[in-house]
Amino acid sequence: MPGNTPAPAIEVAGLRKSFPTRTKKGDHVVLDGVDLVVPTGTVTALLGPNGAGKTTAVGVLSTLLRADAGTVRVAGHDVHDDPGAVRASIGVTGQITAVDDLLTGTENLRLMADLHHLGRAAGRRRTAELLEQFGLTEAAGKPVATYSGGMKRKLDLAMTLVGAPSVVFLDEPTTGLDPRSRRTLWDEVRSLVAGGTTILLTTQYLEEADRLADHVAVLDGGRIVAEGTPAELKSVHDAGSLDDVFLALTEPPTGDGSADDPATSKENVR
Amino acid sequence: MTTLVTATSTTARPRPVADVLTMLRRSLLRAVRYPGLTVFLVAGPLVMLLLFVYVFGGAFGAGVMPGVAPGAEGRAAYLEYITPTLLVITVVGGATSVATSAAMDAAGGIMARFKTMAIAPGSVLSGQVLGFLVQALAALVLVIGAAFAMGYRPGAGALDWLALLGLFALLGLALNWLCVAMGLNSRSVESASNAPMILLLLPFLGSGFVPVDTMPAAVRWFAEYQPFTPVIETARGLLAGGAGLEGAVAAQAVGWCVVLGVAGYAWARSLYRRERRL
Ligand SMILES: Nc1ncnc2c1ncn2[C@@H]1O[C@H](COP(=O)(O)OP(=O)(O)OP(=O)(O)O)[C@@H](O)[C@H]1O
Ligand SMILES: [Mg+2]
Image (cartoon, rainbow over the protein chains, first blue to last red):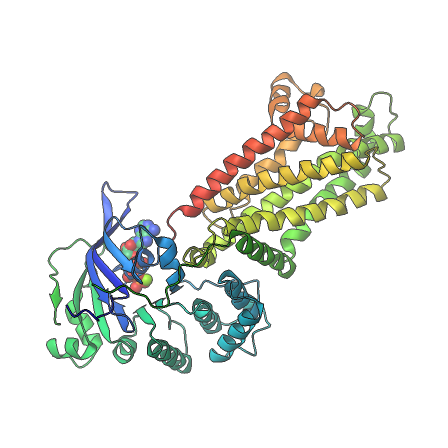
């Protein structure tokens, strides 16, 4: 390996995670040996059917969930051994919008700035900057409870970026955004990446993955069943779009949502 | 795999005091924006004060104080008897609101956000606990003011008031931690205040509204050993200027607060650390 290759921003090896089930004995295995490497300064899209475990994976990577097995390193730190250092490097936009509904947009962003210890002047500057960037300046003084779903989502994203994180997790960030806002977000993602930020995003809009991602990984049956650049995946599967790749790779729902079918073998086109 | 990531990843110095203050500010700002919980804090005890003094007081006063005639004299005696109780209930009301507020945080996803940030982990719940303590103390001032307007003239001196403030701060801290845990333990925001409601019942099953020795044996036994009886008796004694306050009762009151507070804190902490969905 060449000595000057920077360590990947995200390294996941053999990640397993299951949840206890109430009805049956035994656990519901969601992640069954996930391996994933995201190089620094790139965008990786994690795709997969509903219930595949994308949000669960993001939960483990962002220190909210504990892995049952495997190693997970984010920004050079092990999530289990040094969660504090991981948290200091990441920004997370979860699938559920995480804003304080009772506060205004400005107050939400200032709250983040204060928690990042930016100081008064820098906090105000960063707040104004992000409000502008996400087109929220006009609504800034209104309570978030009065925002539309898309506006809340934009504020949510802005809050994630206050601390200028080096690794950003975006779990279905554009759900509910109108086409223009979605493009604004794409531009935002590209400019973050240009600045060296690493992004792991999940999405059900495969066109989004196609346009935005350097790498795509498809999660199904608890494992990564395919990965590569969007172009590679399309050519290997002789498909015109990532939608077709997705349909070719993933199992139709089995009904009980259990993800422990070993039949899906891992394929890596890189 | 040979080079380390030296990029922007900073190992931020933890700043617990700054984080707690930030979260306290958030809690108070929420109170200003959503005054419902705060109004409930003051309105509940005020309505009870009016009801118990002007409707029941004439008769009850004669019952709780030997030698007091029913009517106006009874009302004055009952006002004196139950004001300490209603102050305690005000503090309990604050705790009930913390449960709802904590459950709102947990349900809304913002708690998951806080947990992914490099902040002092205790600051999230501490901010709520302290925020509602401040509100409860402010509500106490209003309730005492109302009692004064109704003719309440306690014999407490400056030191008694100070001790009373200490007692209520300690009680508030203990109950708020307990109720934060109850709120996090509840399944929904709507049911978050159910468990704390039991705390609102306890003053009735003690010396809060009538003397314990008028109760049947089983109830009396419970009343004598439950935490609110020594707390109410201590508040009553301090407001009366220390008259009839036994050191052992005051010690029991403080002991109960410490026990409830430590247990509540430990429970809340473990619930906060539990895995949380994104
Ligand atoms: N806390 C939990 N307890 C029990 N089961 C859980 C828990 N969290 C997730 N699961 C289960 O794990 C599986 C994967 O869920 P997850 O939310 O990670 O899927 P996803 O890929 O993000 O789906 P979607 O595309 O719908 O967002 C689902 O079957 C879900 O029911
Ligand atoms: Mg999901």
